Image 1: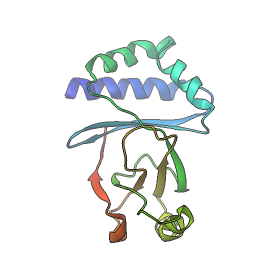
Image 2 (image 1 turned 45 degrees about the horizontal axis):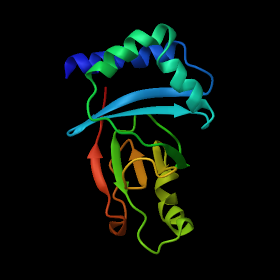
Image 3 (image 1 turned 90 degrees about the horizontal axis):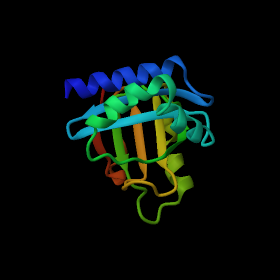
Image 4 (image 1 turned 90 degrees about the vertical axis):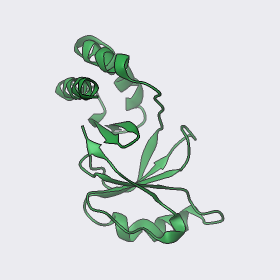
Length: 158
């Protein structure tokens, strides 16, 4: 685990030193059951540039070292739906939109939370990855409405 986390730190540091166009930040979080890489980009057009930059040039060796140790990976594309992105937010609550609830009603329900500093609501895009569809992140624990049935997890920044 330590070797893998060290390799991830090196890779993210390399990426930050010469970030490609549209790249904002990246980090990896550790959970009790695995890891989650987050790459913040200005827009979806930056994904192709980031994908190429991550595996080439000065970053190739650090990427390959971490990739050799990775296992059982999966991914999802998330779009910031409300609030501000914050890589230091360590509390995560994943949930699905309740059946029959309109997206506008869901966003109205979560607006009071995401108006606070360091709180964001992310929405899975293009049906990539397993459900649930939404990921709420914050610096401090938040009590979300029970009807959202959130799966609360603590993430540790690598």
